[in-house]
Image (cartoon, rainbow, N blue to C red; front, side):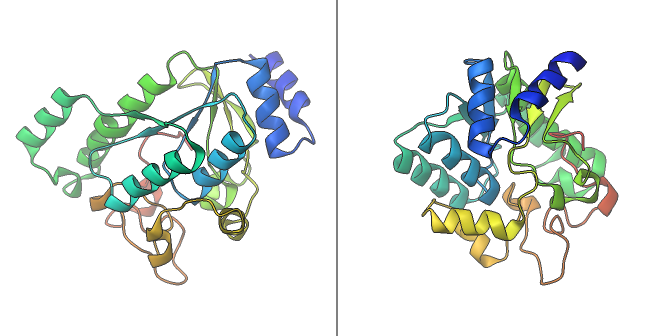
Length: 233
């Protein structure tokens, strides 16, 4: 694995985002996937992939608790690029059992409950979506949280047993917005209302000026524990 990682890093060293995505797609045909939450970052990457006809599968997770604006963004994106982003849903039995036994808002009661909900609605579907993939492309950016500042663009994900590639890791939030708007890419209108990181409706709010990027997600929890389990860091 270490030798392969070193070889892949060498292959994309000094290459642009588009070139790097194309190289990885050529090296692993049909085995590179991109997970989109339809936010600014992911819309930029979707454009890079589809506008340049790069052979990378694109999927999204529908937790069943998304904003109406997020569904609208999905539809507009499919229409714009004449594509069909694959949608993964949580297992019906697991959702029914959770809501029946703990109620529809159990995630507000404890971090354990919230992580249970995240696992059912996001982590388990993600695991199915990544099955068979060799490289997982993400929209992670270094400035999104302190523990991502030293991340490499390409890394090994031990939990999922695949490589993760973060093509816009070093883009600033302003650069992402500028790319999206200058290229006329569909984006979630909630971004214009102060929503930076957009997830499930009950767990997302707009942030105030000066607040941290992640302040709008699970705002009732301790800052150090605000992860959903999709990414280990």
